[in-house]
Image (cartoon, rainbow, N blue to C red; front, side, top):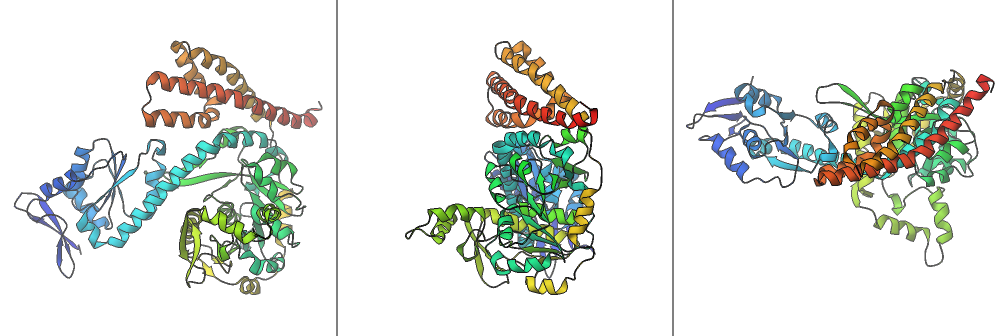
Length: 575
């Protein structure tokens, strides 16, 4: 039975009434259209490119928003699908060209389709009668939307800062695709085996020694930051995971020795893969999401899709921005159950940043003296962060966290809510992560039996299986790309003086062998000229200069990679 009534008004327009213990009108009982018009007249979006509307009713305000702000994207949030259906049947034009969402899960479909490079903010229009009926729901959506937008903008800014470096790392790491294992070989191979993620939070010191006993009972995956902490206690994880593209990441591995297998993302700093003494496994980072039409989409790290066309699949691991979130998705792909978190504080437990034994502590110790100890250094770092307090592990009190940690915590909470395997937080400190069972690691250990075969044996057997792929097709594609780069640099330089050559440059950039390679180097410039409305001639100059710079950066790195790949062909060909 419907909880809503349609009633006529003296203006000839219908109003919508919510029936509960009493009747609540969602629009004026006299002239709902005029009421909506006045509300929209008093609303300004500033420079925003998106209008988020909370509450649909019969959509009069949506109609006026579309008239007042033509061409703007409108996202309408409605708690009750029945209301959206009534509006669709009664005044369908009001919902035309409006994206309607009814749960936080719908946000991904909206924002993954959005060109965030052209995003200029969201203006929030609140339909008060609807909002008051379900205030908590709309507040949650508004908060989640802001968080989602922040995440997308952060991702774009990260790409601006690091994407070109990622490209260079990927090219230099390509030989490992043909000399190491690929992570996809492991997927599904640990079905039913418990999996432990070891992070380097301050609480790791409470239970780190128990991990030695867990080794035959669970697959232990250490994030790179925690690797030294474990190895210094002679606790060898089965896998250590790294996805950091920056040079300092090599410090997590210095002086650690072998015994573990390394899973390294293709963007990882090349020296990590090159110098690691144990078995090496290459992975890639990708995001999977449903677009507004419901179709599943895959978004990869730059260049990976192009490489896979010639080198075959590598194996995708989704990430929430940290190595620990990637390790979580890895264990899901492997089939592990339950998944157990250790050292995942996501907070400054005891006013510390990391567990003792990380390379950070190694670098800070020489700076200490009788006036400046490790605690002082920790406090100085924490004060520079965007601090916030969050519920503490165990549910009693609060703990100091920060904005970035809280993004990771939200990712874990959302993931734990969606997956079907049990998730246990055995950190014993730090922030509470909802939708996870809190247990001591000692309690987990009691319930985990010794496995036969042990995880190490399973891993060794899986890594020994399979044949290495042929690098020949990738080498050919890279040679063609190098030929195109050799042509495009002088052509772009000539186009700076002769605009008639612009079309030829554009055609060359968009060729199959070059388009995906050039996109990361041109993304920042294209975003800049579109957002700033730069005059045409000036925008052409900016992009042409970036094309020349891209050719200068790519050519030596790609040439070096091709030379290394060609060495792999020599034994097979007898050269």
